[in-house]
Image (tube, rainbow, N blue to C red; front, side, top):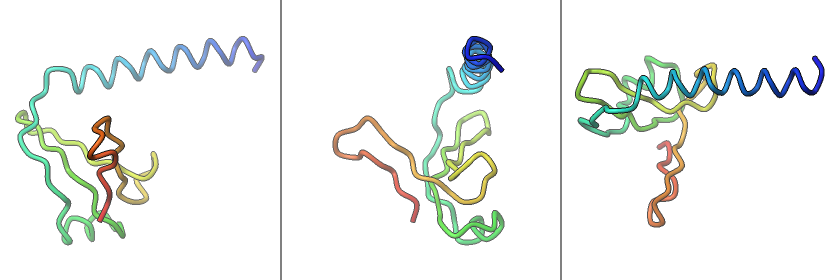
Length: 88
């Protein structure tokens, strides 16, 4: 792949994922935020408990350490007092 082809690919894939993520998140309302239970952590076969963000439409988000879902992950925030929401 040439550098120009790589640049065009990166732009295309970014556009695709921006749309997918926007379609999923824009307009949602957070119902609750809680840490994963020990049972949920074991069901996922993880060693740490991340937060779970539940939305009013029944959907949710769970941060992962990587794309393959190998463990729970932390969340970076823009809040000066809460820079990171850690796993526990």
